[in-house]
Length: 378
Image (cartoon, rainbow, N blue to C red; front, side):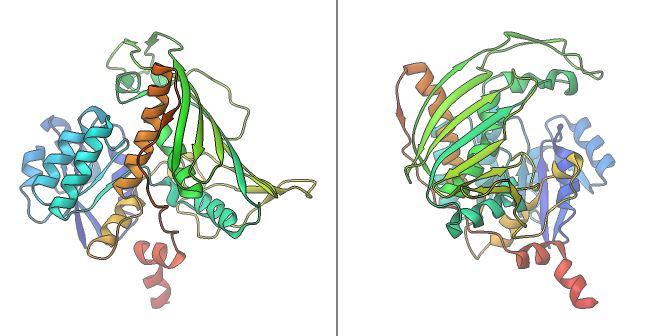
């Protein structure tokens, strides 16, 4: 049993608590927030035994893994505080809001001999794991191209205070970009250079969510981005990420090889149909998943989080977690390079490299979820 503490009880807190409880070896024993009232309300709502301040959580010696769900702007200092007291950390994306802070966190984790993992963990779902297996098998030949189309809109109609989405640390690049680029890195390996252009679509957002805490938001980060990325393998990706397009028509991710192509579902979810069409085929066909789906095929279930934490907990004293911060740092550098390229009108080299995470196995999923024990009992 691994005792889990959560710092940050905002919008995504419930998704994590519910998702983590799918794994019998994880016990969420603490939730903390700088707003003590919100922490206590979250603990009562989610039936978490202890609530209080981050300092109180960090002083509990029984908590070995801390999940950081604070706003991105304070990821770095909060993760630093957690590592400083000798606990393992899993942090929501992005790892930090600057490359320098990300590198410093990785160095601190190494010096403390503690694991540092970062969201997203959706690449551990059946969709991305299946796409990678197809690519690695050589069925679509050598991959030479990728198309990414990420559209998101209307946060101000749903979220009570989406200011963070339109402030430094947010925008389509750092908010949803990690889902897409992490999927690509898992499938194709690291990226070596980037060029891009960005702009702001609407300079002010009017918040109309029924439970809103703010009425308007002044947008201070670009909300529409177009980029080209070259992988170390030589493959080239065209990437469009935007908060300003309301109707999408193109696939989320399409991967092109010399013998055929793949289409992947929304990387903000774990599962969904992967389809393939070889050059000689006359239609697309469904690819059977290589691992079982992690959640029911409903939007609500697919937005639950937690398998990345389960993987990190299972990695203690054995191996690097699949959501290792080295991957998150590389993804952060790639996404930051897009903005740097736009600012300087230049091609930007990506200095960091990372290994592709190990494929996830059915045995591991069954062991973490208790399905293996259930089968043994039966």
